[in-house]
Amino acid sequence: MTLVYQSTRDENNKVTASQAILQGLATDGGLFTPVATPAINLDFAQLKDASYQEVAKLVLSAFLDDFTEEELDYCITNAYDNKFDTEVIAPVIKVGNHYNLELFHGSTIAFKDMALSILPYLLTTSAKKQGVDNKIVILTATSGDTGKAAMAGFADVPGTEIIVFYPDGAVSKIQELQMTTQTGDNTHVVAIKGNFDDAQTDVKRMFNDADLRAKLLTNGAQFSSANSMNVGRLVPQVVYYVYAYAQLVKAGAVQAGQPINITVPTGNFGNILAAYYARQIGLPVHKLICASNENKVLTDFFKTGTYDKKREFKVTTSPSMDILVSSNLERLIFHLVGNDAAVTKELMTALAEKGEYSLPQVDQDILGLFAAGYASEADTATEIKRIFDEAGYVEDPHTAVASAVYRAYHEKSGDETLTLVASTASPYKFPRVAVESITGIDPVDDFVAVAELEKLSGVAQPAAVHGLATAEVRHTTVVATSEMQAEVENYLGLK
Ligand SMILES: *Cc1c(COP(=O)(O)O)cnc(C)c1O
Image (cartoon, rainbow, N blue to C red):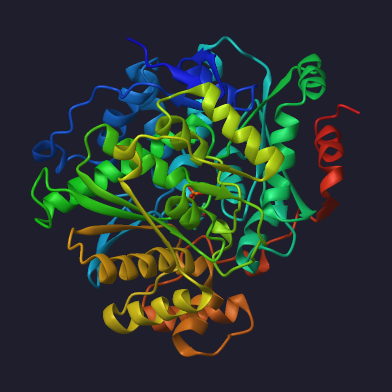
């Protein structure tokens, strides 16, 4: 039996896992989504001693069931190697009254590495399986982290080209330097005069532009997506929730079978959706807590059933969550309405045309799994300081949003279920915010902050930060949103 991935907007658009990965987005504008739950046996008595790679193989072979064992072995071994600075890949650490799942030990020190280190292998393997020899063009809009992680994954991978758009002035200095110093002849970085939603909207438009696709094909190329809408991003993220639970069992923190809560700092809804799929395949989960920053469109959605993007876009200290259109929520909506593509399409059309939609009758069991909350900028800074004072541990602002939302949830609900917080970035990626929250003094410069953070945390700066100050800046293009396509055509020699 091959698992069917169906577009959320067209019930006749059904593909296999490798086809979904290769296409990235469905051409009808929908997202490929599994319409059944893959059969898998999560035996934690055994899994507690399994390596990250072994858990990855178990989970990936269930979801990507048209890949052979050899193909998966190849992808997994190349992805989860010494690019990560710890053998366990994703450590689980007790911090105060919860556990942090550290997802930032890869080459760009943010959680996007967890999936983007394997995506290039899944993608090139999928192309080979489908007999495609076009050049694969990765087009990516990033709010700061995806872009670098994608380039790190794809740089100099034969047969690929990668173009990254990020909002000018809306990413941290460290994030910007990580991108603009990227090496690799097939990497291109463009700052746009707009916000992340502007970048993402135009990337989606280019994907669905039939003329542009045709032009590309004549030139022996085709688009694919490294954004979290790609199944090849989503599925590898299921792995670490299963792995983390196994680690909790191993540490004696939970008995196998005992439910946990998972709190996820959420932007595009990819990471928390992966936690939902982990629960679908048998991970014991009580609540999935969706944490937002001041761009709290999701908090309002879970509270009211209405998704309303018509609001002011706020630039916060957790920029990777500064998002008003959470793309992956579409997949949850699809499940909430009983995997009905027609209804999903209607709602998404309303969102595009009217800026809002309200949920019809939905599956209350699915909806009831979610709790939601948001942390203001002040809450986030207070949480960083509090965790430092309580546990001597420094959280990055994204993780602190989640940890603050969990703290408020815990106080209000009295729910004592053991809670795992997805820790999505190293504080070294946002050192100024971390240091200022703790000391009350803005270090003014990211690199001064790095030195101070080293003293405060007692954790040495990661290799990803070391050397950035002196690396050569290779990418300096800044364009208006309306010029994005011209840049793409220019890089690909379509002009
Ligand atoms: C991307 C990102 C998020 C948001 O994850 P989604 O899957 O988009 O919800 C949170 N924190 C950090 C550090 C990120 O890079």
